[in-house]
Amino acid sequence: MHCPFCGHHETQVKDSRSSEDGAAIRRRRGCCGCGQRFTTVERIQLRELTVIKNDGRKIPFDREKLVQSLRTALRKRPVDEVRQELLVNGLVRQLEASGEQEISSQRIGELAMDALREVDGVAYVRFASVYRDFREVEAFSKILSDMNCPPSSELGKDGP
Image 1: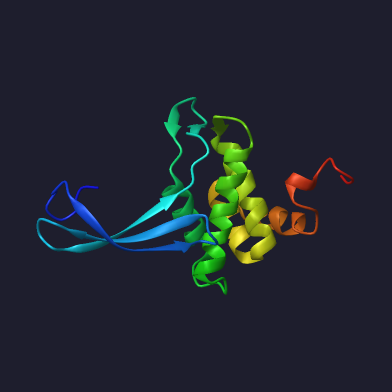
Image 2: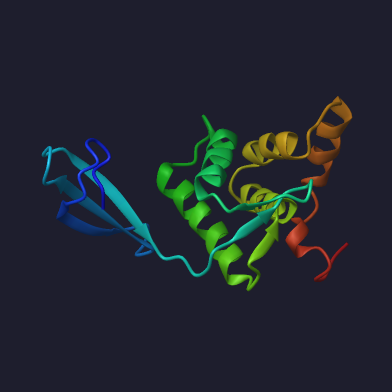
């Protein structure tokens, strides 16, 4: 591990602990060159995921992009950091366990919306308004009326 401060190639692990319900390990490290300390997080990764954008481009899946999108939707909502991290971990595990290496950005958005719908209705509407690019008030009315229906992942099982 290279030091993020001086670039020295040798660092020492000072402390390790499990986090995110055992899905990650946080390591406190010290640089042998400059002495600065920093934290790294190691997560299980089942496979490399590629996102297929709406225009056909393929880009590597970026967990942090998903984290930022969800945090924006959940800003100032009564959902603590631990719950948010569990939400992201669940979504990433769901994507990795799908068996597909290439996943459309649309599918990721739908999964995120379904998860947010279960956690916080306001965050769900916020995320949907950006994800679906609402431009008219009617779009908000429609999504609010749709909140009385089951999430899209449940459609086709026993209902509409």
